[in-house]
Each structure stands twice: as C-alpha cells, then as structure tokens.
Length: 170
Image 1 (cartoon, rainbow, N blue to C red):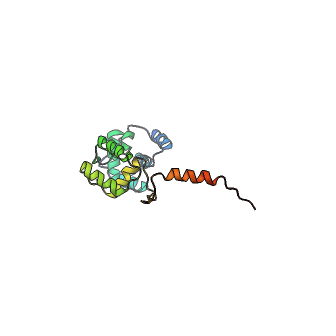
Image 2 (cartoon, rainbow, N blue to C red; image 1 turned 60 degrees about the vertical axis):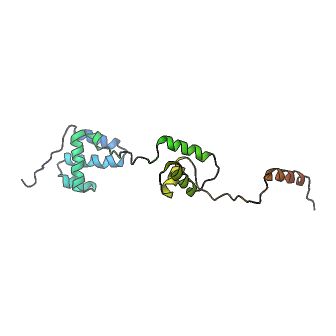
C-alpha cells in the first residue's frame, strides 16, 4: 500500500477548465489553491502538491477535502466576519450623536464616557478604532486659553478694520 493515495481528488471538471480558472483568477489565495488542485490532477501526491505551492501537507488535505465537497466555490476563503462588537448598533449610533455635541474629545474622555454610559470597557486603541470609523481623527490639541475674552472674534474684527487704513510708505 505504499505510494497509494488514501483520499482521491474529485475530477468533476477537466484540467483545461482548471487552467481557465487559473488564468482568470485575481485572488492570490484562491490561485494558490487552484494550482494545488492542478498538481493533484497531474498525478502529484498531496504532500508533493502542497510542497510545490508552499503549504503543509495537512493544509493540502484540507484544501483537497474542500475541493471534493464543493469544487471551486469551496476554495474561496471564508473569514467569518470577526468578533461581535461589545456595543450594539443602536449604542454606537447614540455614541456618535453624543460625540457630535462637543468639538474636541480626548481618547481618554471617550473611554470614560463609554464606560460610564454603557458599562463597557475598551482599550484606548479600540476607542481610537471606533473614532476612526466615525471619521474622527487625532490631531494636535487646540489650545483653549482661559484668559481669552468671550467676544475675541469681534475684537479681532475691530482691530483689523482700524488697521486697514494704515498705509506703509518709504
């Protein structure tokens, strides 16, 4: 029994059809898997075909099993979407509205707001990711001088108007 394949690859399409799929494939992950299937069609063992495409023998068996179950469609990776958010969609919308009420936020302020309002603890990095998803970006803090008068803009306009009448000459 040495040299015999224990699991055969399904040949539900021809080698020419695999070559056509390879020519038209844009996804590098799927392309690698198609080459693996092609090598299997050409008579290579799972281990030989896996070595040629640069994966382990176990990964080769996994790809072959997927091919046997679903053909080309089963070779396309499915990443599953990741972990669920700690905040619901409604809470995220509400947080966005709360953040719009104030012009400047620090990451720490948002972190404390989320913890106080929703009882959810995030890292500062994750708060940054959430703020980035709201199209809010970090920047150098705007300095708010406590000595600045309430009507600073009006004073500046008056000064600019009166200084416009000054001419420089030689």
